[in-house]
Image 1 (cartoon, rainbow, N blue to C red):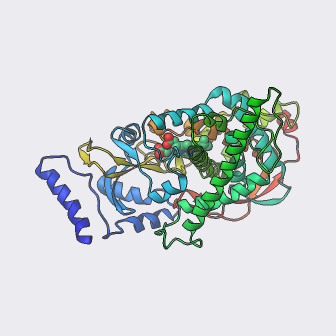
Image 2: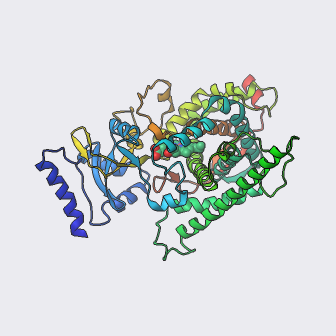
Image 3: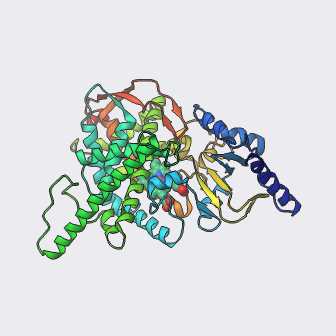
Amino acid sequence: LLHRHHYSYSYSYRRRREHGLLPLPPGSQGMPLVGETLRLISAYKTEDPEPFIDDRVRRHGRIFTSHVFGERTVFSADPDLNRAIVCGEGRSFECSYPSSIATLLGRHSLLVMKAGPHHKRMHSLTLTRFASLPLLRSRLLPDIDRLVRLTLGSWGDGQLLPLLDQAKKITFELTVKQLMSCDPGSWTEELRKEYLLLIDGFFSVPLPSFLSSRFTTYGRAIRARTKVAEALRGVIRKRRRDEKKDSSSSSSPSPSPSPSPSPSRSREDMLDELMDGFSEEEIVDFLLALLVAGYETTPTIMTLLVKFLTENPRALSIIKEEHDEIRARKTQESEPLQWSDYKAMAFTQCVINETLRVANIISGVFRRATTDVHFKGYTIPKGCKVFASFRAVHLDSENFKDARTFNPWRWQRDDENGIFTPFGGGPRLCPGYELARVEISVFLHHLVTRFSWDVAEKDKLVFFPTTRTLKGYPIIVRHRHQKVSEKVMR
Ligand code: HEM
């Protein structure tokens, strides 16, 4: 096997040369079997954001070959190749997840679905729910505003909070609300606990099923998936029953009692869209994946944004001013945010961009070439795995001046020419790109207008298995006693 591993690499390389074909991108295969996997993992456990790619870009250039997670993989830190990879989805590349992740998500999940008409339909349905301006303005923003207030309203003066955990709670409740109109309560909290186990499974090493017991992380994740799917099935069946009742009675429907989710549902959520024309299994996989997609990403950016602001007092003071001004325009402290308020958060958008740039939670995407791809003098052979690194492009000083420095002001003048892609691109562009921004902005608004905070414990930022702070960024929050409106008047 070891012999074959090296042989096939050099054979294909030699074959290409002999036939006058363009070579594979240069690189090294590392050790037999494990390749460079261990080097990659140990590199990203440090505070340096891009040590693995930096080192290889220095030696081989922005397109190079490595061998990680059991496969030869072409890495791209080149913005043009990244664009070709994400836009070539369904033609020369296709998305490629390990089977352990595909099992956890379910085969009907948008994330693992191969590009094609079905994916297109589901993707645009998701975009209409989450990125449509009228919906964001009229329904999503008011829900976000209300749910963020609810959580922050429960924070006591001087309380110690792991910020990441609170941000995750908010985001989970928001997504459940948006998908199936359930208000937060013990049902959502139970579901969230199972979710935590499920998400752990994404970052664990799966064992063959006969070894995978209930005591391994992956085994626990599989069981949690079964429970989550069961809970979602319950919601779907209840909705079907309610629909039947609605159609058989002309009077308005009476809300059903708990334990199932909220009686306060409207009939215009994502679940309603899916009820016609999709099987129960398809709906479960679809909802489950949407909950996963927003759960690790948005709360991490919320937390890191607060960390970066704390470390940059000048930026924090501009943010405070921006949000205090918005609050001061309200006649009552409890008056909800309007779309025009969100649009007035200009510096906030700069800070969000900069956080996404320096510490993007999705550092890049894996794909597989479905045909031989020729690019800038190299061939990526059919079947080869590729990794389009967004973060390497974002942290390249060729693309951004002083690229390793957190500098939100750059977004007041930079036109990044399509090389800034924290939400991906092409047919798989993140459908939550605008929703995430609104969620982060509203969270920041209520945080800075109602609280000041101190860091409770020094926390370290690492980049493996995902971008995260090791302790979830514990802070001590204090109420800002002085009324914001009074302060702005002075
Ligand atoms: C700051 C927060 C977020 C970031 C940085 C982010 C980033 C990304 C990226 C880079 C992709 C592309 C993956 C690929 O090409 O394979 C993606 C896909 C996706 N995102 Fe997000 N995302 C965020 C928030 C959200 C939210 C809140 C939702 C919930 C609606 C969401 C739902 C999805 C879905 C469903 C996909 C899969 C699309 C497909 O494969 O067709 N994301 N996201």
